[in-house]
Amino acid sequence: MNAKKTNRIAAGVIYFLVGIVILLLIGIIGNILITGVPHLSWHFLSSESSSFKAGGGIRDQLFNSLYLLLLTLLISLPIALGAAIYLAEYAPDNWFTQLIRTTIEILSSLPSIVVGLFGYLLFVVQFGLGFSILAGALALTFFNLPTLTSNIEEAIKGVPQTQREAGWALGLSNWKTIRGIVLPAALPGIITGVILSAGRVFGEAAALIYTAGQSGSTVDYSNWNIFSPTSFLNIMRPAETLAVHIWKVNTEGIIPDVNVVSAGTSALLVIVVIIFNFGARALGNWIYKRLTAAKIK
Amino acid sequence: MENWQDQKSYIKTFTEDECAISTQDLSVFYGGTVQKLFNVSLGFKKNTITALIGASGSGKSTFLRSLNRMNDRVARVDGSIMFHSLDVNQSKINVYELRKAIGMVFQKPNPFPKSIRENITYALKANGHRNKKKLDQIVEESLKAAALWDEVKDKLDQSALALSGGQQQRLCIARAIALKPEILLLDEPASALDPVSTAKLEDTLKQLRKKYTMVMVTHNMQQASRISEYTAFFHLGHALEYDTTTNIFTNPQGEITEKYIQGSFG
Image (tube, rainbow over all chains, first blue to last red; front, side, top):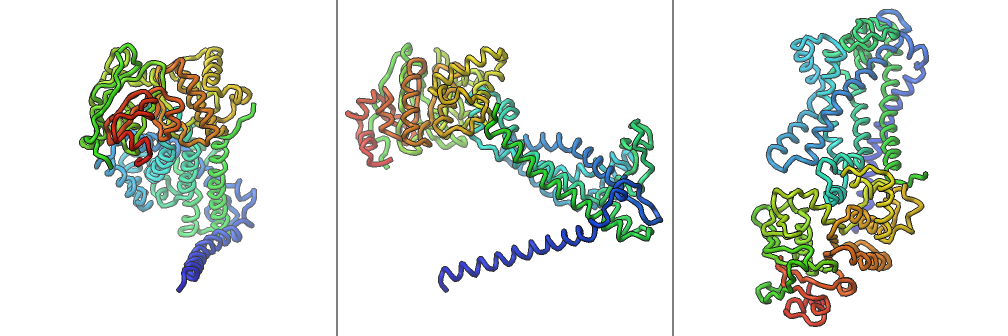
């Protein structure tokens, strides 16, 4: 067989395999959107879910998902940033660093149901937090930290070594070089990493079932007292998220319109995650341009 | 490749007063045991340009980067580096202060992804300069000294990455001299530039000679002969010959030096 022919066959096989991946993706997302989007309405988004009648909405679940995400990022981002800076800039290349990296890898492939049960035992039972947003956010932090740390570490490592040398040669300390030169240059990558991991957190269900709980308590959006049990901001109240809601209505739900609710919720979940993904790319590009391209004054 | 023992070394010496910086028996070890540089003792005369030439891996860049202690985190450096009658190759020396006095320009232009102005003011601000007027003045002076002012004076707040490679390299020089160093170390500063930019850079360096002492690693022997007064030839980690550039290029003492100059290896 001549080289040209082999090349054509190889290319054909590769296109075919790529085609399968794309088809699967379009099939799944298309199916979810086509069945779900028609059920998305203002009423669906803005009303409380119902436990046995038809026509319930997902207002609380949507808010809970976003609020849990915010809290998770507030807890996990500083830790991940610190760990990533250490791994990328300070860690010597020895067995200990290798051990940390392996641990992070293992942690990132931990099944989320295991994270959930661990969170249940530690936060809910041992620390006595009960089924609460806080317990959920802590469990999600465990779930999120490994990925977030390696995303940020990659972004920091992507900054060319010549930039660090430029800083050192100007008499800047290592920390000033990192803070003033390396981190700003890595910022677009860091933000992309944060938002992509946010998408994962947003769709997580298994880790939350036993930590943030399933039953939506009565939530009052006009109650700004964070310590009041009915306040929407109270972090000690149980909170069902979109993903948990989908799981619940399908397993234990007795509402007659279960298909409508789960299709609509799934579509909303997918749409939000897609917005995160495109948003991450757009924001990263925008910041990179702000940092690098001509700024006209 | 030629054995370094085959040639006696011919090293020109200066008195301590004549030197801006000098080394005594400088040796560099990587990974604890691999020796890259062997007992190099060279003095660099004030307000001159000295070229360091030699084949790849001859240790000239390693030597240059030892002078402002940039090798600290990757290698062990033995011997002494005399700067203002002080051995600066000691752990108690504040390397951050030292590097302000001994600036460095790298092979590949490495401006920060910030505006042209911020490229120059960032290190100054980090050192506590806050007076806006004074900073503006330093920006202008440094850019003028680096012969870049006329090209960028109307776009100081635009990104430095929008400049051409040659302009970026001159910005890096401006950035280094904004800290008012005494010595500038240049690590193949023109190797990534086209001939026109190189000529401009060389003109700039010739102008700067009046105020600074420069040590420059170069692969380009024409460049060494065009702009340097003195030339040191490195071979396999040894400084084999050091003399006026004219002598090195027209009347080298050693056989290996002569072969390298003629282009037989390298």
